[in-house]
Image (cartoon, rainbow, N blue to C red):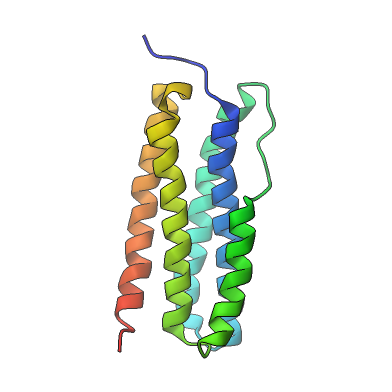
Length: 155
């Protein structure tokens, strides 16, 4: 028998990492724009749109449990955005540095999703578990695009 109850705190953690991703890519768009790297903007914007879609899919499951979906970020995401700004300035404002940092953000995103899938399964319905797994698969495609773009800038 499938469980119908989901732990809203776990789902809100997933929403938070998506909020982090959105904020990280907004910062990346600002950095890319200020350094003449406009060709990166569509990819970064797609990642923002993807996370907005993920959040829209997740929010109803928090609300069904009588809780409010979060609009906050994780502390690690805030630190990541600060570090991204510093790293790009230190390494010469180059495209590869920005893409490396975005890939690290994608890795943090992936890690959060994988942890939830591995450790939070008992607190999620089969449907929500499947949704999170599907979102992770879509994110991995975006991660691979960022990685491919970064690798194309290898010296």
